[in-house]
Length: 176
Image 1 (cartoon, rainbow, N blue to C red):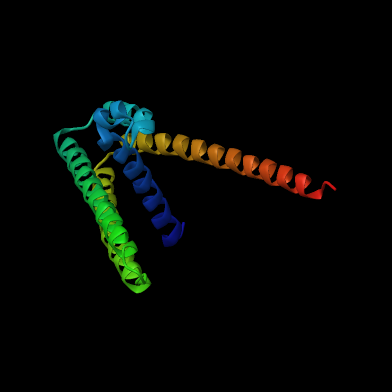
Image 2 (cartoon, rainbow, N blue to C red):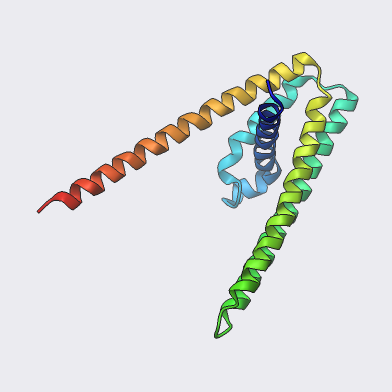
């Protein structure tokens, strides 16, 4: 296996951990309020199940908690970045002539900050993963493979819907 596919798999695994972790970080208060993360309640359950299956030692548990804490802090920072961007956009809309350069610059700044946050979170989860033994990595790998299969099934279903929608739209357009 070359370096690029290995890096891709590491990033994919970390992204999944990040995605699952973000849902976990949303916590029950968001879920109960119907706020952000409410539809990810099943991820919290899956993450807790995975955690219990891993039977972590004290050092691994510290890395798990560090990854969760990093993820939660970075998720909060990303939300703050989004709110700041929204406020800047609203302020720019009040001007008679839109300053698209300022909007673009603000957007680029937020994207760079969020990219750094994602990288920090990914690094924390990779540090945790790298501290696992082969049996624990197998458990994580199995969970990731199941998640990838579900994502592929959702993507295929979405593409089917698009094709049906496009087909129906095309058929309507052909009627005299």
